[in-house]
Image 1 (tube, rainbow, N blue to C red):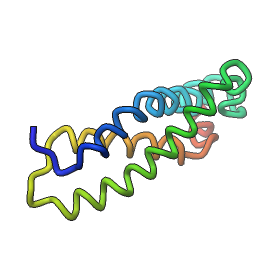
Image 2 (image 1 turned 90 degrees about the vertical axis):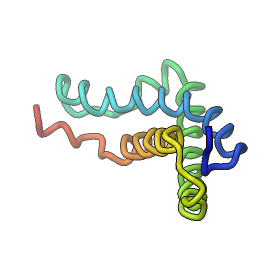
Image 3 (image 1 turned 90 degrees about the horizontal axis):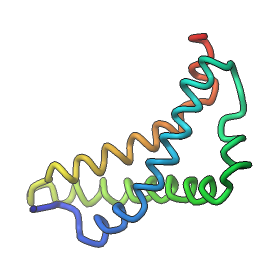
Length: 113
């Protein structure tokens, strides 16, 4: 499979994305479903008290995905002539999803209640 991203960047994403995606999924669940059903709350509070190692490592992986996206975007722009694969696009979309989940305000969905 031809890729516009260097191998070390792909390996870094494969190492960081599972935990970052799992953490972002849990935070997205709390920000949407729990806020709409239970009202405004401190998102991540129960997670940090029940699974503190998962919380800390998940936050670090999310920050790592932000850094990865900045480097990957530059690489994709510079090497766009060599062909961008579907896996490259998928990696970028996963990183963008994680960033969007982390940037949405905690009470954004509270008005829907």
